[in-house]
Length: 429
Image (cartoon, rainbow, N blue to C red; front, side, top):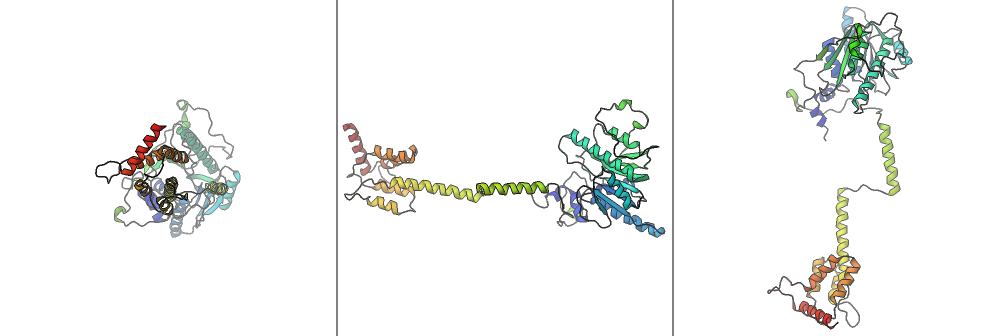
């Protein structure tokens, strides 16, 4: 597949590179903001599970726009953005990076320290597990990740703040909605246009953070249990219907369609990804596999045969078979008095480039009227030497089958004499 194959299939992937976003997910946050206005009045924001940093790019752009608007009205403090992830992330201008675990209290303390012991206005999380294909397992892990993000948000989010996170729509998603409603009076489930319809992902937008009276944030709350829940028995705040909002209108591209490279009359130009992974989790596995392959190659002197090598091997095998047939044909058929091969035999031995058919034809033309030849013995010797009945039958056919150039389509005189003598010898025996 070529470089542009993914550009053809995914227009948002292509547009992300053209506009300088590190990932196509940047359009998801932009479309959520266009519908829910999550950046209004925000100057301090936290991006959880931030790598590779596309949402941090959106935060930096939007918060700088808010800062410029605030300066027009009077003095304002510059925006602060903290990005947190277990993986290392390439630097971004105006974004403070923390490499830490969102389930640790120390991470929350570091975030608050960067805000001068104040709390954030907005917390976003686009984290998702590496899916396994086992849907129940993937949904459970994603639910746990969302609850971990919500848990740390209760430590760092100010009252009235906004929380946005990825969620997998599934059978028991109502339990998550009920848990979010404990802390936020307004909870929405959004589906941006850039999110594929074939994906079960969606995003919850929770506004006006209002923790229950007397609630003290901690990292030990067992919010999600393994016990099945009977939703018909839920009442009050625990039984809610969360409104569903589709972000983006019909004029925007469809994330499930393939578009031509020259889209909307704009000439296509290939762009490399904005930021390649600097510490991908699969890097160590690739190094181990490469090292193991090198060790196996050095131990067994194994080489990876290409198609050309295979063709050469087949040709060499054919040449070796021809040489074996030649060796069988140069057995002295008629020896002279000095026990030397005949003239035809010498010619066959010296001519290395002669093909098998020519050698057989030379033997056919040989006048064997004065030679005492036992065809059965000769064939037997050749057969034993080459362990091939087909080779013996081929040689015998050359001696006794009529030549094509005979006008009467009968065996030549030499072949007739040899054949008759062999039959006479058999009768005498």
